[in-house]
Amino acid sequence: MISGVSLPPLTLIHVEMSLIGIVAGAVVLLGLLGLRRQPGWTAIFLLTTTLTTVTGVLLPCGGDITPAQIFGFLSLLVLIVTLVAPYVFRLAGYWRWIYVAGAITALYLNVSVTVVRAFNKIHALRSLARTQSEPPFLGTEALVLVIFVALSVAALMNFHPQQKPVWWQRNPPHSSRA
View 1 (cartoon, rainbow, N blue to C red):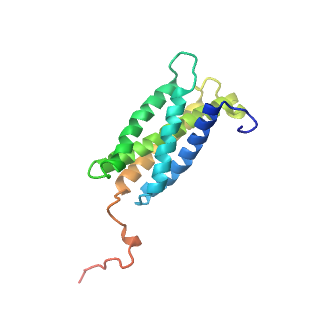
View 2 (cartoon, rainbow, N blue to C red):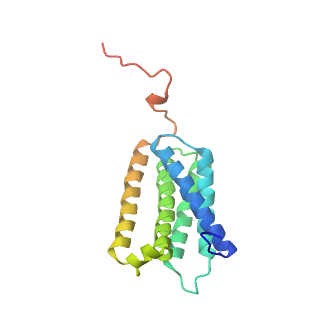
View 3 (tube, rainbow, N blue to C red):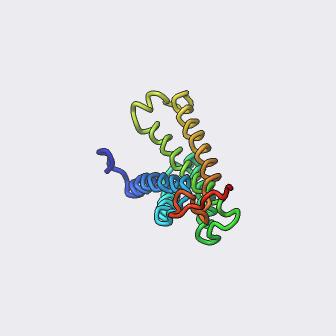
């Protein structure tokens, strides 16, 4: 039960995994921005995001393929490549940027679907954008996209798991100017 609403078991698992995935993904994203791998949080993020995607694709939809299912299939493709990067190729070479781009894309897709669901389920938001083609909804989705693109660029430029930033070292190298 979420907020007094009874949900079918698959839907409940889907919602719970989605929320855990978003929180874990935010921690992983902060790690990518701070040049630091977080293997435990990464595993939680990738597992819960994969479970969110799989359960989302399995939810009944009335026969037609929905935009949420298209997002789900896209997310599964992104997650497959993202899972291979750290666990098979150990982020070597171009697998570093594939991992960063994939992890942030998977998180973005999860957040984007959450925004859609919020505009569907929260009365105050639904009254602002009944068809999800109104400016409040489109502006929110555009803002989320811009934020994730900016974070992606920053993470791609900063995340080098083999290197430790100078400010983390106990004895940073001194300038050799004479």
